[in-house]
Length: 107
Image 1 (cartoon, rainbow, N blue to C red):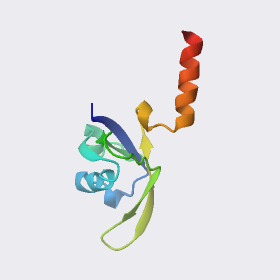
Image 2: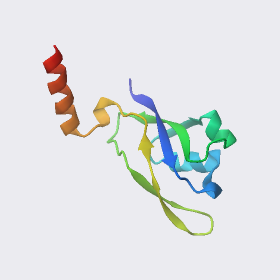
Image 3: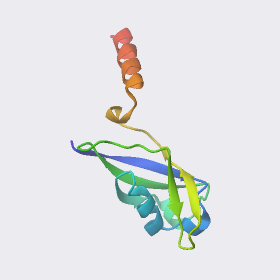
């Protein structure tokens, strides 16, 4: 396996940035955008936008907690990024040791 799909949320995304094209551009910082969920595409829920992104394992992974977005008017926004889950390889090493320790306790 060289990549994995991960759902990413952008909470409180500015409404004028809410389109599949803009979401794809923002999500491309993390990996290859695949698709949005139906609720995001139809704007039925506007507290966060959600997009599925393919994250590759064959390069140094950068998992940002926020990204800076500049709109067509030149205004910059810091957008929070939330991951619904991350593969074990992407988590900081302290969590890896903790996971292995917990796994050892239950074996």
